Amino acid sequence: MNDSVPTRALSYLDSVYRITPERGIADYWRKYNVEVNYYSNYDRNLDQRSHYIDSMFMVLKGYENRYAFEYSHTLFEKASLLRAQRQYEQAFQYYYDGRSFAQTHLDSCSLIDFSNALGVICYQQGQFLKAVPYLRQAFIEAISCRPDARFYYGFVLPQAVLNTMGICFEKAGMLDSSLAVYRQALDYINERADRYPQKQTFVNSARGVVEGNLGGTFSLLGRYNEAETHLKNSIRINDRFGYAIEDAQTAKIKLADLYFKQGRTSEAHELLEQVYTDLSSGRGRSDANDEVWREWYYLTWHIYEEAHNFPEAYRYMQRYYAFNDSVDRVNNGLKYTDIDQSLKEREQQFKLTLLQKNDEVKTAYLIAVIVFLVLASFLAFFIWNNLKRSKRHVQKLTGLNKQLRGTLAALKQSQEDNTRMMKIAAHDLRSPISGMVSVASILMQEPGRTEKDRTLLQMMKVSGENSLSLVNSLLQVNTQVNEQEKEPVDLQDLL
View 1 (tube, helix red, strand yellow):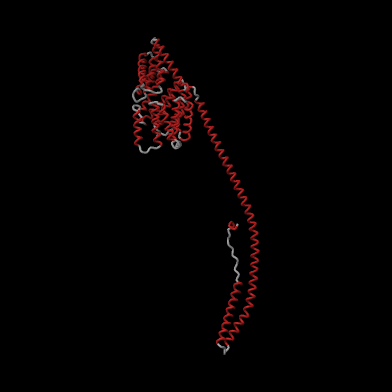
View 2: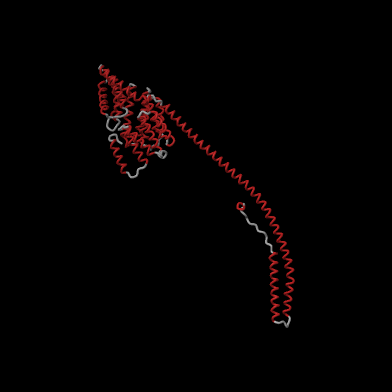
């Protein structure tokens, strides 16, 4: 987005999104972020800005951890919006939540926005030395960024942090420290300017801003020649379309003040006329305009007073105090808000939330332990009951086993008795049958037997032999005793 045609940039953005077939969460978030940037820095429409910030939250819902950078930046934008709406307590809460989230999910480079914002708030409250630690922390976080960090984190924020820190020292009356920090900012800009060939407009504009602040400090030290050189350099760089015109106006005010101190009233008046024309036309419109108007009224009042034009001097004195009072009334909410107390309260609330969550976790663990113990008790009772029943079954099985052994012994004895009786019977039967077979054989061999007698004797002999065979078989069956065989038995099935 270029300063010259920001509205055209939005139309191009809409056109690109209309023809892009597949758009993901990050794509929608970037689109809304550009629109938030537009309504923050160009159109300055708080309602539209709030609408697109809500859209950023909406597309990230449920994906906050996956898109950690985008979510932390959205929290930062929400805090900045609330600050612009002068809802300072809520703004500090969002700054705290955003910084806490970034500390958990991102590297230290992503904390710069939050540290810088807290430093700027302290500066706006007039607590200049209190702002310095926040700004110093922001710069330390900035230089921890990777060398390939984005332009915003690799250049824009670090030099802006140094510049704001220099202003804080200047406002606190520590002018030597202010000069040192401004020079450090210029060195930082010059060392990194070549890394961003496509961003030279912004690089030069940033250099012009620091030049103007450096000139203001030299003026406070009474080193007017050096002050004039730096202030003119600042105006030359930024007093043109596409650059920081609002900062050129601030540099003109400082240069007019310098001319006034040197008695160069006409040159001072000419610069004030240029600033008035810019402010009246809306050229270089920014949040810094209020401060420029304030200084403009103050210098115009004193120039007329120096020229002994007391009616005009009185008129501009009244305008100065009226404007100053209106600005103070607007900023009273911020000035009387204790940022440290607000952050402490938010931290305590955060810790309380953590304690509540810990209590919930402990309660859940306690319930789980109780449930486990109850289940363990039921299980132990079930095992004990089964064990007791198993013992009864074993005792019963032992009795049955004794009975079976007795029965087996009786059967064995019965078999032995039967075998002995069969042997006796077989022996007693075999002798007469053998005699019958022998007699039949002898009679068949005698001469003079008729065929009929021989047939009958043959039948008697065969019957006798068959009877002997049956007696021998019976005796063999009852005398062959097999060894007892054992087989494995499943005790559970048996029980």
